[in-house]
Image (tube, rainbow, N blue to C red; front, side, top):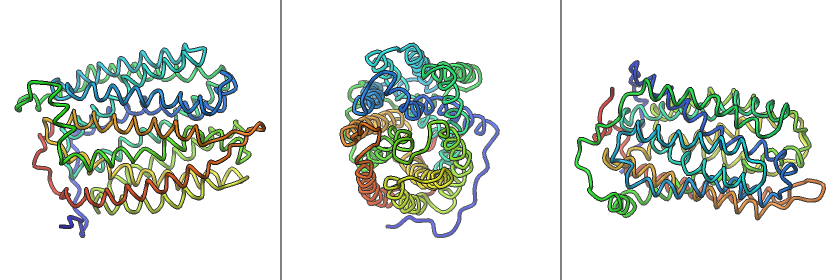
Length: 420
């Protein structure tokens, strides 16, 4: 049966506390995403400074993803056994420790170690935040929630990446990590002092064994399709983003100095796109919005990975439209997938999902590093191959999203725990 929404649905307003929670989660995600994304624009600086190859740099990106994937599986069995606020604070403190190690790293082995530590803690935070959002917001509001939280991605471009690149140009590539700590510490204090406990799920019947809780989550037939979908979704980002700046500098022919402008303008546009996509997901349906995003992404990925020398303005336009397509896929997919698990399984489900995403992302980044070949003059070869792989995966994801959409009516979630 097709559950598509044929008529626009009225939108329910957020309460004051719900607005605060969304803002906190968005700010939290800002620091997490910035920590991961800052590696990409620093790549053109880090590779010559540390004397590493594109293949080694790809594994530096993958180190975070692989460790995050492992920690997610380890945490999944316990994810529904504690107050989600306490779990969030524990892993956020570990994330700040890893970021500090990145700021102090002065060699490739130390950088790898720092990224592993950061991934062990940072990779779980997104799943805990998603569980909190799912507990506190019904399905008909989650598109907007995901859309607002996604602005953290845009904010990291508007504020974080240009500032990080400025600090790196002013001092060196270590400086952006110290800057991340400067905003992460206040975020942790806000969570500690203002966020209410999120523990309603503890009043429901729990499995005694954390191991069996993990096993039952992984083996649950209802979750299989969603797990496959979330595994494929991050492929494009992990394949293309780590080499984006090197591609712009060495292939497109723009200078390193204009990179902050590209990220700034793209991010400013994304700040508006994310909430609009979220509203469209809630009003017109998650699957129709996902279809639009897939079509746009496929077209723009092919264009982006095959361009040659272009003026700055055209590069910015292509980036803006490409990110609009990416947001139009990720936001509705996250909102729809959040309706799959019940209250006592959300922590474990999201932890396993995050692990699968990180592991798939790590494999994607590592594979991209093997595919990309850097010529002595700096030019990257086979970047277009990555685009064709991303397009193929996007089309497979569209088929899976259609199947999942048929299983999840976009109506009020009967398993929702209520709001505060």
